[in-house]
Image (cartoon, rainbow over all chains, first blue to last red; front, side, top):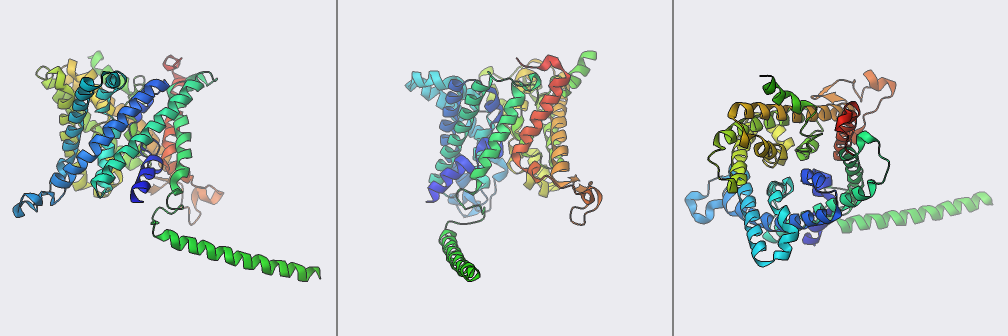
Length: 245
Length: 210
């Protein structure tokens, strides 16, 4: 349940593009055609799925305050968290390079479709942002970190696919000259973000602080409400009958 | 000398990093709900881009071109760690507001873009000017967006109420004015930037895309 919740949350509610504006640069630059947008989106899912769990391991066993205690008692008081930026970005840059080499070696066809996008991705804020959010939201297990990486990647993929499709269509519309291209893309993205905000209550019933455990209580409360309303309508009916009499 | 001044002045308007080059959008949108956060973010980027451009420019002849991206990332990451620690020490509340977006200066495309496009091919002094110019161009947009979002969204500027008190109904609120809470939500940042682009391109027809 925890996994499903995190997965949908990272795709829709905390969508990288619409809620936190991560990866906007490539989102705007590479969304002129659907085919290239699909390529870049797939590469982002791929790289996020690798780097978020890796950085989770780094964070858990090297960077967090007290994370080095597995080395021995005397290391338990070390706090290396100020190094997280440099460690995360180094991991990401190396992984991207490594993935590029491996993909080129074993799957030339995949390399042809993803290859040109991989170097772009090392400096995509969505990738570093994924790791930093993973750290600041204190994701608990490796499985959840992988889940979060894949989910955020899919959210980003959906966003760039949607805007690319819209931009292909809008070319035939009569947009004011000064808004053409970049301006209208910004405004459309804003409107899409407003649309995505409506996913906000999807998991918690509108209350951000609500927990899954509270759901049964909420259902009971609703049932009580319904009962009360039924009682009320009954009494209303009686009242109406009385008045009619 | 005239050429040097262009390095600073061009990015402010006609070659603005955000509205024309489309670089560094992420942070520009996410943290502009308050003017103060926008100003601090602009100063941070000013520092990182100015110093980083000089460092990269000094090292440009000894960096092998194959690993230059990693070298650039390490230089930026080091500078950003400095900014992050300074913010945590002197403006803790603000650094909580900015949260991960300080870290995301590392992947701010303006910085990598300027390193690649300018610092790798020019001397330290010109690179410094270029860095300052682009960071100022970025800062201007951030401050404009932050100004309108805070003014229209919560009726304050830098935390001071400028339109009167919404609870006691003084100032503009006495006339029935209401804060537009929608301006504080993230989608409005996109629309405000869209409008800035619209205004800018209406004034300068040469910038219009076909």
